[in-house]
Length: 360
Ligand code: PMP
Image 1 (cartoon, protein in one colour):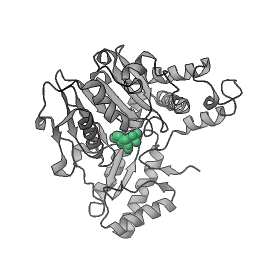
Image 2 (image 1 turned 120 degrees about the vertical axis):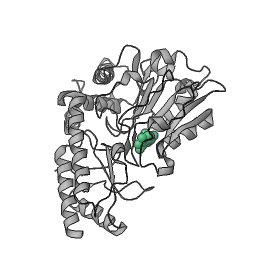
Image 3 (image 1 turned 90 degrees about the vertical axis):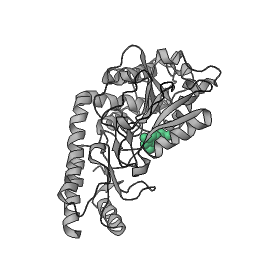
């Protein structure tokens, strides 16, 4: 039996994607070997590589100017690559500070150039997403950067900001493909694969080709988006197995009914868990403002740290792992990405209700 896996990332993957890999590892596409053992220049690999790109393009409805790239170095490398490529000499970019991952992005921007905080919810302990009327945008900024879902604090943008003519960029590591969005509004989106789209080892970047043409010159080859764009992410050896798994996951998303189907199941799952908190208000508290709550990372507190430790331990014994909150904030967190089935959330919700009745 599979464990109900609520880890924040690497995270649970769809059984269909795993089963396909299991079946294909000994003999993939009648090559007598696995995709891991094949040249990245082979025609068989080339098909997988392009399938992964094409599936991402069609799921997000990307226009011809948007290109899907596969990079390494995690979202953390994107924190630096983005300003290196797109903040011109002496310029700056605007950042919306919504917690740890935004802060890391801002820190890297300030190593390379200037990352200005245009809005922040720090004074409220990052328990909400700043409202558009709180933004102080610089019309000359190179771009505006948001973190669409805050994996640690459990907040999520439900509407994207209007940045006028300033390019909008998002770190979507923990909610890419969770619902249909107008991805063409963004000049660049990046996401480590290991939450919603595959294993760790590959980072997806979706970028406007016309913006790459305006990027800074003189960068090391591997730090320039232009290299990946010109060579379709095959300048050097890409993480072939991770990309193969992304292809399997994206096929599963498509077969399930695409992003509309993902949204439907994700809303049901999130609402179920927030509903338990509403039913037991003296036992479970959600620190996040209602209109900023995440449908990917549901964070909650119990009446004491002892009860939280007991909750995590009993849940584990009942077949549910990964429910401890991030070490920087404590509490509990259930990460319920696309691949977490509604049944898994139902098991957790039932456990939460029972635990509250026994210990409340
Ligand atoms: N951004 C967000 C929103 C994240 O959740 C994470 C990882 N948890 C990162 C960036 C960092 O990603 P990576 O480990 O792939 O560098």
